[in-house]
Length: 423
Image (cartoon, rainbow, N blue to C red; front, side, top):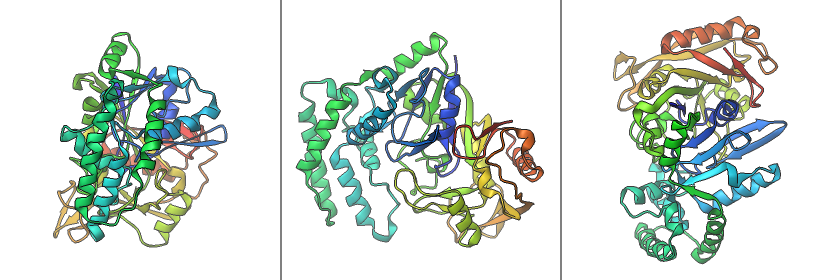
């Protein structure tokens, strides 16, 4: 049984949590394969709005087991808060949530290192969420990290102390004013670790292999977006993991020839949180309207998202890098009321018109080339079937499908799981 993937195709915040929640009824296992609590997956159902950061978005469905894969980095303190927030839903978390022993731990000193590193950059800061993600992945690749499986060893606190001491020396090296009380942070950390140890730790690659052999349907859930991939994103303004399809193989231990459908999610426009180049960013009333109507604030940080027209150059790039087989368009309802819509179909790059995503998309190198289309005025939020969608929206979708050469199977017309139209 092949493993299907669900990925974000822009700079994150595309609405992956909602779509995983919608699709979970068709799957037995939801497996998160990379990132950490810098992600925020927002789910809305039955009048409830809930944000998940590390726990997979299938947790609210009785039929699904949720796996946190080896490619994920876990902050026990944040994870405990997530578990505490789920208690009111009366879920059997112990039976529904498994964690890979190979997943790495975010220590309190990783977060302090993150803050010190970002403060030292001054105006050149990359817009880190300050969750300790980057330093944790640095320890992983430097072969110094602590993993979930270490918590089963009797001497894990000694390993912790050795790594934390090293981190404090590094913090001092940055020579910035970072105020902290490590003893207090460690109290919360050790308490959270004890709660984490009550969950089931698994060898996730073996678990998923046996699940495949047994015919179980598996959906791999990504975090962040393709343009934040450490290799293929807008470096250095990226995250610290592989957010693209290849990351599902390394983040879960699934072989490339076992990948099935690759479901790519994008907004009907484009947003970005934090620093970094953004060719179609709007600084006018249209951009303000997108942000206000779309409630564009980071689910994890609360930071306002930068908004702009849909960038097809970047979207085509993400579709190709990931091998996307079907698309889901989110927040079509936000564009209701715009008389004219623009779509970036090419870049003017250093005086030459190009249609591919170049090495550098900084503003001094790139000017977007737009195609213009008619907008629609209808309120989409109460619509329940594809035949209700206005002609102008269907024209917009047809144009995108022709350009991207991939079918758009889902159109989201609101945040609730019921506001999802299948095509």
